[in-house]
Image 1 (cartoon, helix red, strand yellow):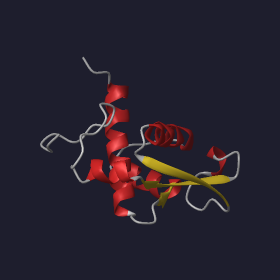
Image 2 (spheres, rainbow, N blue to C red; image 1 turned 90 degrees about the horizontal axis):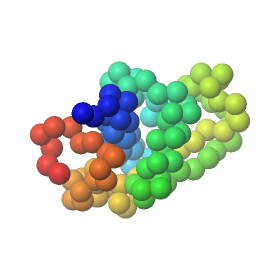
Image 3 (tube, one colour; image 1 turned 45 degrees about the vertical axis):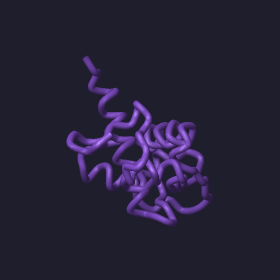
Image 4 (cartoon, rainbow, N blue to C red; image 1 turned 90 degrees about the vertical axis):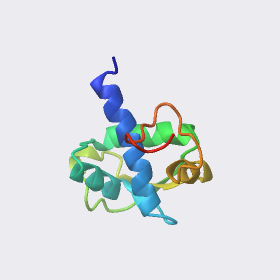
Length: 115
């Protein structure tokens, strides 16, 4: 039986990839990603979102950029370092979202979409 937390992470990773696809070619900062996830009732703290981005970076799906600057849409209490992260899809991430490549097992496509 799949644990609920595991399913949430896998679904969240797929949603993050879709968000970054919508932001192509530039990508999106963590504030945008967080807001869109909240709109589909996937609530992530900044730390949780960054953890997911790091996992996907290690899988070769995304590229992460850390930016200094004003945090405009994230709860300031969650951001201790003053940095804002931005991410964009890598070539492998694009192929995964466009369904031309099988995603890693830790990324869950919604039911009905081909694997």
